[in-house]
Image 1 (cartoon, rainbow, N blue to C red):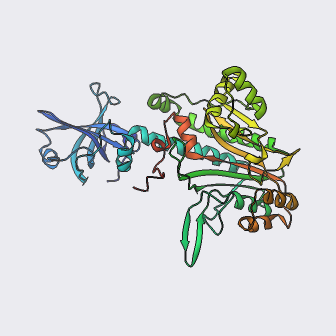
Image 2: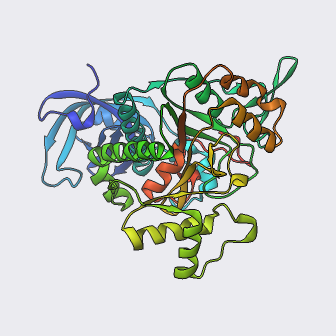
Length: 429
């Protein structure tokens, strides 16, 4: 007999169900097992007098064991779990479990030590489904916009972008590095004539940071596209992308997210509000008495990002806001400049920067000069070659999938959100 998912059980038909024994309750006359699979859960009600073989088989079996039952689903007004119960005729022990070393009050680091157990919860299970829906909504949107998906190398010969914060890897007789981002290869795809590309892949940052929103390995959703007129085209594309992702999440899981996380999934209206950085500084100072520290002038910091979201809600009633006109000293050398101002932006959502996007510099003489200004030499020689033989105007951005999910669900840190977290002090499981 083939397995039937719990939420697909027909009434009064003999079927087989398999899953985790989430709870086992042994009473005088009955044993009740809450069996859970990826579709949901059901109460398996075992009459001790009628099912002596099943009772014997379950002797000593603990919660979190993996069981298979054959029997029939029936409706019951006495069962709280959906008004349904499963009356078994036989049981198979697929895997017995030891006592679980986690408690509900276990701290996050203990839970991460046993992450594969922690992920069994309804909350964590839904979290991964939500992330899947978010990514699928965005990927489907891009494919509909004639984008193609590429897969760039993560082992690279030179330290990418900044020349710092990279992991070194022994590569036969020399050193290689783990890529911080696919930025250079995205732009190579523009020089190769692909015009519209995206990638969803791991990225690595050797930052000894222990904040709630930093991790040494994360999943990045990158895109790049050609024949743009300005970075406004890039912002427009990102608006549409995010709306598509959130629409898919809301459609598939909006009600469950409200029930489990107490969060309303809000699909934002377009266009998103925009503000220049210096104008934002003035607003934050006027409204909240906030003065950007001298060392952050020309850029944002965590406190400014939080206040920027507060300002966006008060002024525009919007969860998202674009900030433009950053200092060239605070932006990457490959951002195009106009009147010496980088043609790019940060996108702020729920008090956190989720994107740095820009129109890229595609003209060889300009990008070579800007690389020299930043003191970049041999590390970017191979990259500069992309622009010597013709390259269309283009732009793009990247979104951290994990950070996006964390903010959507109102989770306190990436440790809670990521399938497996990596940080300066954690390399297992």
